[in-house]
Length: 380
Ligand code: SF4
Image (cartoon, rainbow, N blue to C red; front, top):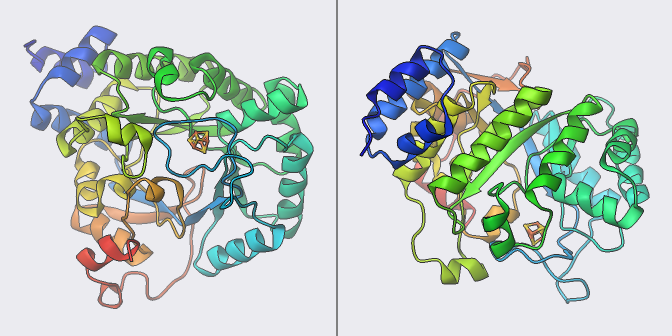
């Protein structure tokens, strides 16, 4: 096993890590040393000791999907009985509830609907932007943009410009999974690695920002994870458009892949992946803890493994919860966990700008449910 001490020293001396060094860190079992180095880098990047979170909501406008991903428990094939497409009225109702709770935006994604050309998305955005001009519409991951490209025959940049003009605020980095076709092609028929990266390039070129994600444990090994990180870092060098990196582990319940895969990533694998990402992706500012998939307690520990953001209070989530991620939190709970980890909690918006909202009760933890009850609440 490679001695990782000199690698961590180089990272702490602000020397960019190589792919080989990244591999050595991911193969090491010394997560305490790796986590400590990631925590140190996190402190340097965020010296104010603040950990942020966002109040928003995931809205899935449709579960109809034209492709097959064996890791997905959310999609329904076109024409099957339990498909849905949300109406504008239903979406507005959900946005109104989000605003009531102090929310600043919405993360809206859906399956790859075979009949929706660009006009459908433009109409949706225009209607919502006209009704809620200050509300941030963080919508449509690269596979959805690629699907619009297939249906409407427009190039990515043209699509992004039109969606931006219609009111799109930023793009979620979903559908990244593992950015290596050797793995992607085994588990999905959605867009390729290059297509995902090219969509992101177009997003950044028209002046929008996006996040980057990684879902590991879908048959990938360390070499695929390193390639994923390398591709994200290279694109960030080129465009600077990623606001944050969000890794999480495959959620297996109710999925075809989950029935086949024997080994799944553990808590240690998650913390190591997060910490190594913080060390390797030296050009990305923010790293999210994925408490939704890892549970609130491990999500809190992640704040000492390189994460500076607790993600969303997640008023609604349908995709990973369909695959077994049954965790739930309210704002008071997230603030409590952040404080107990030694940080100052601060609400932010989708671009990580602080939100100054007056609320007298959000730190009154006595009004929140106990941690264990909240952790299982969504399963009921
Ligand atoms: S992950 Fe997305 S693209 Fe893949 S099947 Fe599910 S909804 Fe469709």
